[in-house]
Image (tube, rainbow, N blue to C red; front, side, top):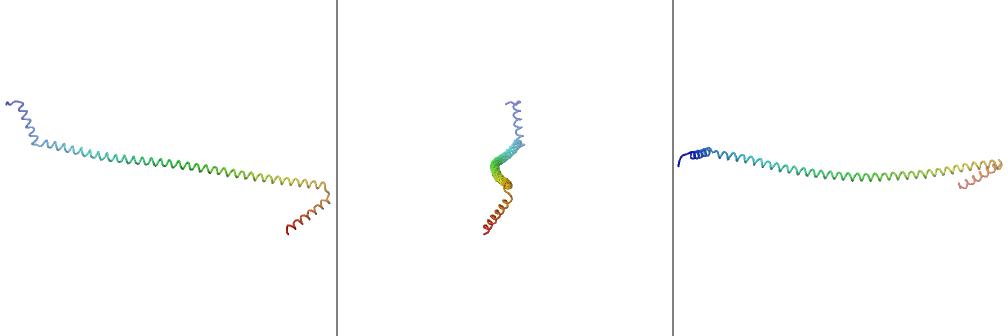
Length: 165
């Protein structure tokens, strides 16, 4: 065996590793790596927790959104029903109002016809009485008128006496 550069490289290699082992460098490196691994595991666990919480929050918000959409749809449906009901009520009231106005107008027309007929009858009686009076004045002399007047008074008195009895 010869002592050459390879031998010294091998000896220095073993001495180097011996010093490393003596100073517990591999154990320190191992501890450092283990602590890093633990930190990473903690961060991963924390990330998992945050992810789980985020999923829960997301599902809660999605549920709330779905619930609010349903409530909104229910409100819209209720508003539609209310508006349709309101329209039907207003239409019914409108038709009733029109019907009442129509009846009132018909009653007014009937009343106006009756009043017109009364006025026509009154005017006709008045005209006929004036005409009769005019004819009587012109055709009958005063003595006949007085006689007729007295007879009329007697008939009226007799009629009144019969009514009182």
